[in-house]
Length: 304
Image (cartoon, rainbow, N blue to C red; front, side):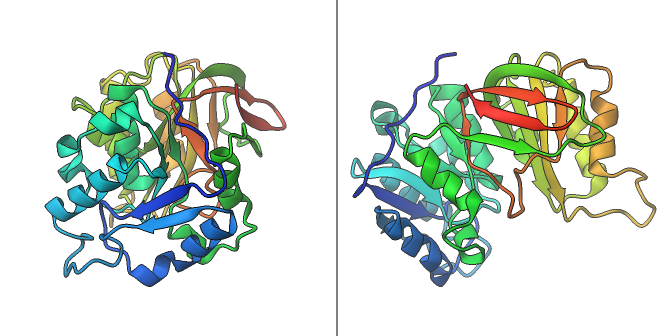
């Protein structure tokens, strides 16, 4: 697949910020706005940031849809970073029009619930997007944070190279393929729907947060039954944080569950990659080709 790359950004370009899912107070994006401006960009803040919602969401479905649609259609907006994830995109994703976006694509940045948008755009339009920290992360990290700086480097057109320490569960090897993935819950949720993507030949990555351990097991078995582990080029496992257990323990942690489910396959697998609901969350181009090397002493993922 030859994917389309949106234009990289230059000084003075505008980055939009919206919240298409969970509510986020307006003051929480101030560090992000200030940092983006210090990088030389203009910022356009959507109506759903600090909206008048009284429930979980940043606005009604129609309000969130309208805000997202406006940013996608605005030709002056060169990239779109989301305030936060949570839950909500699946309620509006099929109503979003990508007609103008396809003609004039822009970089889409986010993770967690935004994984569904990455999957939808990759599956239906073959346009690269960015799995990365969102506006909320700038509140907790300084402007020199390397994980936030990976966003700046990516938007400027830099080809990023990441490495991490080996994990005892790693299955060594090398692979090349298009990188795609994201939040496990959203990947499982997408199976059989319009955002579902084929994993053959891909470097598939996964992460999650706050799930019951048994549900992690269930979702992985769902992906297996759907053939998602049949012939990927490799699998990259990020963080699985704040998991909950039942009163009678499940008996395994997330990595042990993944290891056992993937043991019958022979593709390379690495664990502990810096991606997920943690500070160590690098910017990754979904839909771009990467080279992965899982060695005895180091794991390296580099854009091809």
